[in-house]
Length: 217
Image 1: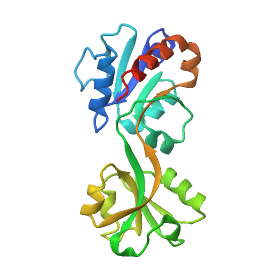
Image 2: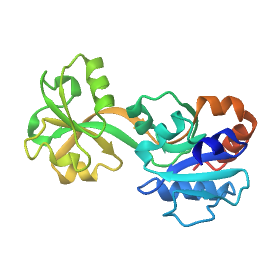
Image 3: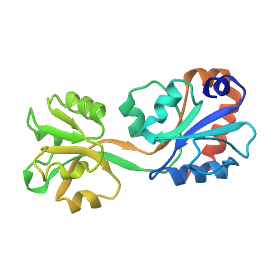
Image 4: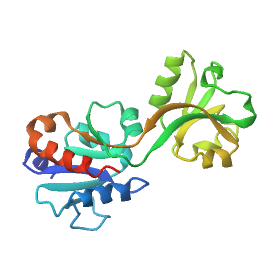
């Protein structure tokens, strides 16, 4: 399915199969006249646009599907694209899923800036590549501990001195007696594109990109 579809004239868009970006992605595509013809639990579906198919996969995997040409386009967070380090084109900021990737420490740590975090500190995160790159730029060597969820409890349990995690409102940090002391990067949902697809399907991709930009929230 994937290789045939990618080589054909149809566009394949990879969308999140769950999580906070799933519903806004479905909504913005719906506004562009692209609605799945099958239920949300289906991995691959045709849509109401005869030139577009959808695949539903983990948001964290979408850059991989796009990079390897399984999908021509994808919708996922800028933070996720940065973490993979894969070379894909970013065509549009879709305006939803806004958040910051922040450095946070316990309120009683006495640290008020990421540059004050000592060499050798343990930093827990779901974004080890972005975190390592960030501290390397600061000139601080840290031990990055990769967690898959509940990162905010790591300092309380003594697993880490600091965390790098997504924050939208700061409520989760506050609830765990943490405070943000620096922003690693700001993120939102991005429309990304396979480099080869952009050349071979340029007109269709540009037309769709403009439709989606017009719906930007």
